[in-house]
Length: 334
Image 1 (tube, one colour):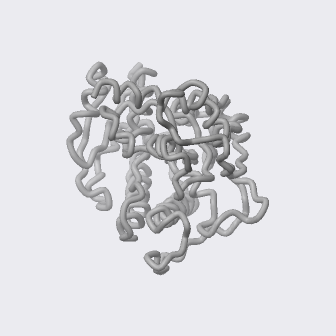
Image 2: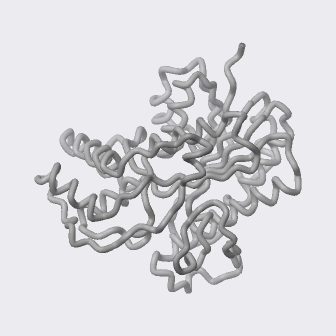
């Protein structure tokens, strides 16, 4: 029996590369969609050449350019999304809507595709202007998730900063786009959406200490070394990279029904625990984080992922250790 084929976007990133590696190790074949050639990703997957193929689509907002690239696939995993960078709303909004639409339309044209898994974010489960008082973030809240695309985002007073507000809005728009397409088009495939919080752990794509700034690990590292959480995310919890990868693979199971949405958020943890771990196990790190830190995480309920995907979250201690240990390995070698 032929191995099942996954069409995947975003495989050059932190979560995408780790998911791609896990998929080929699990026996899947991959068709990796890239905007441009990636020597680093090819090297990471070089031991699985018989299971991996690459296709290049230079403009992901052009629906016609995806035509034929999904043919024969069994699944689609869509991880690609613009990261917070700059204040041009089109940089965020156009890919969020047009790429999501293009992939879902093309997948609907391919009868072999059984499921599409979209990697969203906790941001798509939080109103743009914040959580109602006492609110708990979960998949089925009836909050107002609307986005005014005409808003002058450059005039925003959002304390997280304009790029994070735009990123948040783009995740809400992408999520709305996917939900509306599913309801209107009623495609043959099941659509599952994953909503991770900030993802921490060993990054397969990182090759030097300074590159930690290019992934969410940089946010955790900043908090440890500067002594304060980065203003743009200080209340967002964390989840281990291995848990997020595991959720992607489990979501492909036929038992996971169409329309399922899962918040991926580790259990417990707070900045005081991070400070205690660093002071106890990395006393020579030069970290400025202390147990005096007062910031608390948002309240989340990830019980649905536990019950339906069987998730058992790795600890905050493991997240912190994996990030710090990898960083120290790079620093030692430089």
